Length: 316
Image (cartoon, rainbow, N blue to C red):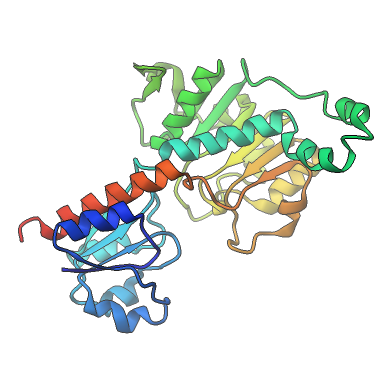
């Protein structure tokens, strides 16, 4: 069995496959060249860069497994692949905590203006210390505030756990989730009765912080209509999909003051985001690094390696 790992994998994941007798090639191939190269392999592992669409699948009759290191499968034509008997594996559990912690980091940073103070201190801290102290003296505590979560999958639940541990109230909307067991400290608590509501408008209108954890949809979830239902001064957090937020509407709502601030790890036009978002004083930005921790990457490597072995060698 031969696997092309096209977007990289941690060494431990490669070793797991090789120890099982699978030949692993980590030499990346361009999207265009994949049509020539991939037919020589039994499987491919990707992250977010490589696209595995219908045309590529049709060009690879020997393809048995498509592995995705990460949660989302937006870059893979999943249903079409499965209709051809191709197995799809991903690593939904590996990076959940890392993404949730980044979201919470953005929330904390925005609450205390850390993203701005950090920039001004090197230039002005020694000569305008008192002025800067006054300028950034109107932060807010997160304890007691409401964290709204749209999408209560693994990442949403990890964020709920962090928020509850921080003394926040949590409201979550997810039409596909009926129960929610959340880890708080060393205990697993079923907090469905406290967390989940079937009323999206209730979450929008009560949230002091609103975080998105949903797959890509046909249109943005947060558009002008959604913003109109929110609290004055809400803080928006998005480490899910850039397409989930109407970025022009967000900029407009920031200008009007309806949205107080925003923390963005994902953007509509990656890898070339709208520069207005990057330079906006009320937006904290990171370059899509939600899952980019040492622990998460190792977890992804292990989970992906093990699932590829099972998918390729089971019944063989």
